[in-house]
Each structure stands twice: as C-alpha cells, then as structure tokens.
Length: 587
Image 1 (tube, rainbow, N blue to C red):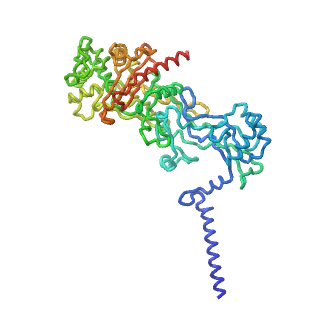
Image 2 (cartoon, rainbow, N blue to C red; image 1 turned 60 degrees about the horizontal axis):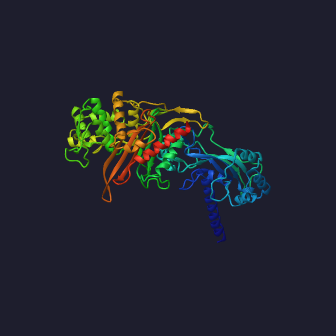
Image 3 (cartoon, rainbow, N blue to C red; image 1 turned 60 degrees about the vertical axis):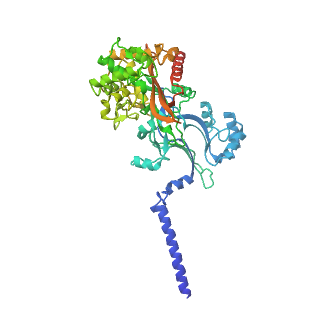
C-alpha cells in the first residue's frame, strides 16, 4: 500500500517538475520574445527591470520653417537626476552654487522620484532651463546619475498644425504599413498633412536616451556609468524644411483669434517663389479627439463654392476671346434670368460690372463662352490654375510623381448636360451650382495673374535636411503644366482686380485705407445649407499686394457663415497691415 502511495506521489512530483521545466522552456527558449496572447518580449522586459532610462529624443524627424527655426519641437538644456542620488547632500550643495537653487529643493525633488527625471522647480511645471555655462559646470562634476543635456520636447499645439499635420501611436497600423521596418519604442505615424505625406522619411531610427544599470533595489551597479545611446546613423533624425515663415504664421494665427471664423482660414503665398508663407485653417485640431469635429479638415485644401471670386475666370475668357469691349453696357438691375434683381446697380460697363460684382454681366458672358466651346469655362479655369491641382509634384528619391500635399478635386460642371443648359451655365458663371475650387488654388490664381500669367506649383516644403543641417534633397521651383493666359490678358485682369478696391462702389472699397495697395475679388457664395433655418454663405476675398510690385497673394474665406456675420475684409486688412509693419521694422 505504501509502495503505491510513494509511486503515486513520485508520479505527481515528477509530472509537476516536468510541467515547471516545460513552462521554463516556454518562457526562456520557445517564447522568450513573444510570450502570452499579449506578445510580451520577456528579454526586453528583463532588461528593463535592470535599467533606469530617460528618453532625450524619440527619434522621429522634425519640421523647420524656411529660416531653419524649429516648428514642431523645442530643444531645451535640462538637468537630469537619477533617484539613487537622494543621499548626496554634498552634491546638492554644489548644484546650489551652480544653478542658484536651494539645495533642499533639489533634495526634495530627488526624494519624490523613483525614476530618472528632469529637474523642475515645482512638480507639474516645465523643466528648469539651464544656460550653456551651467550645463558645462554640471557635466564637469562627472557624477554618475547627474547629467546636463539638451532634451527635445515635441510641441503638441504647434503653429501651422493643419499644414504640418499630427502624429499618433498605432503599432498595428505601423506594422501593416511598414512590414520591413523595425519597430523602435512606441511607433508614431503621420495621420494628416505633411506628417503623413513625408511619413516614411520621418520614421524613427531609434530613441536617443540616457541609460543606467541598477541592482534589485534600484541602486547603481558598481563601476557602471550613465550611458548615452542613440541610433547608429548620426545624420538622423532628418528635418523637413518647410516654406512657412514662423514669425508671420504665428502673428496671423493671433490675428485670427480676434475674428469669429469657425470654419475657413487663410493662405498666404510668396509670389516670387510660390511658397506657402503662412496657412491657417479653422476649426483647430482637438489633439485628444482629432476626428471629433471638423478639426482634421484643412479648409484651404478643401473644394468650396467660390461665388463671385469665380467671375475672374469668366473675365479672363471674355477678354482673351474678345467678346467684350469698353463700350459694352450690361443691365445690372436684372438678375441672371433677366428679372428684377434685389440690387439695382443700373447699366454698367465691363470694369464697373467686375468692381461691383454684377451677376447679370458674368452670367451672359459665361453663356457666350460656352456657345463658342462647351469646354471654354473649364479651359480658362485651368489656365488660371484653379483645376488640376497646384501642389508641387515630381520624382523624389524612390517616389514617382511625389505630391507635397493632398488637395481636394476641383469641379466646374456637374453632369455633361449642364454644359449646354443656359440656366446652369449662368449659375456657373457666377461661381455657383456645381463649381468647387480650393482656397489654395484661388490664392495661386491670384499669384498667377500677378506674375503676368505664369503658372507655378505651390511649395509647402523647400528641402529635406540631415540632422546636421546638410541638404539631402531640394524641391526647386516648378512650373505647372498646361496652357496659360497671355501677359496682355493678365495685365487687363490686374486692372480689373484693382478696380474692386478703387471703385467708389467697389465691393472691396473698405481696403482703400490699407497701408499697401491691394487688388482682388470678393465673393459671397450661397452654400445651400442652413443653420436654424437661416442660409449659410462662403464669404471670400482673394487678391495680391502691393499692386505696383506684387509680393504676396492672400486668400481669406469664412465658410458656412450667416448672412449677418462679418466677412473677411477686416481680417484681410489686418494681415496686410501686419506685413507692412513687419517689413518696415525689418528694413
């Protein structure tokens, strides 16, 4: 009986030992790098238990403005302390002399931390910023667990957020998108803007961090100093040099805070280079819930109903096709259907019609153009770069026909039959019905006219640079393909656009008091949408300045605005005044 019991117990003990050995084999040999349904890497976790570390730079590429100033990050000189220094009172006294902070505050900060940390004067505050001299003195102490470094802080709410875009952590999507790219830390992906377009170049090559090996109770292992680890490639992370001027961008963002524009924005182009100097879209992105409202939509790259801004296209076609003259008069007290209009403007010539935005004139001219050729209106929209996309495109590294930014597709006519329907043509001529164009393309149209008809691609990025500032690739200025308006037509359009401001009844006469001479076109487009049974409008002004020597093209749009809400002319004037003052101070 006892023999059977011993045998039974032996079998149980042997089986238990075999189960334990099997489990150990599973943990140490078979699934060491992918344990349990959670995919835990036990090798990495065992290392993490023996080290204390602090990340200095996540390693993802960053964005600069045109002058090389950081947009998406700040690099701040900080003091890093490891918690095992809590009893080094002599050290705290030395630090007091160097950074002029009481030693007891430093001691208190060390005592409340369990991991390496960046010193702050108060818990929850930003880092205590060192001077170059203080950094040098701290590092000359050569104390293990104390180091002064420049840490990269990513800006959560940086300028030009719609243009540059945002990133989010998503390991699953990362592994699907980049199957052959090793994962470093918590992989981040660009989900909008330039962050998304240039994502593959911006991927982290590895974190830059300070590492310290510790024993089981968190004390330093004898003879081991703080180690600095970084990716093997010293040229990374790369930097994307954008076209924006951070100072101008920031000032425009502040100016827009004074106006109740919930949807819409502005785009400012440098006419000579066709670079985006500033771009602001509303509403702002909610970082915690980016898809919760319209915040992720970049309204400057979204096709909108342009209203009377589109009359510029009809004017170009009418002038170049010779179907209008100075002597022509138009019945501007009638609407586009020949009935009495709410606005009784009387009989106006062509220039007066443009300045006062007479709908009847451009409805009639649109019909004449379409009678000549059913593609005529679209032809001139393309000549003025309103359709076909305006982003810089070209071969770039292994990317064929790379596009710097994504923009919505423009549209002129809805169905094929609309091209021959006189009512639809009339509505199209005044920028209504199915007409949709992006504000960035409208800004480019104004820049094209200001340059005498020369079409250029819009640049958002000037170059890609290594970490040390050396250039990897440059995006040179590029002409847009396709036909253009003649220089003579461009000169006539310039005069028309200026009359919108100069004419005593011009729709933009408010801008006569601006410090720089402005030429442009207003627009108030019916959207067909309502808020509390009240119609909503897209309110526009697009133009360029100074008129005599054009430097900037600027478009401003307030989308889905109520009829009694302010337009964009006061904002436009404020931006022009700001640029004038800036140039005066810089000169």
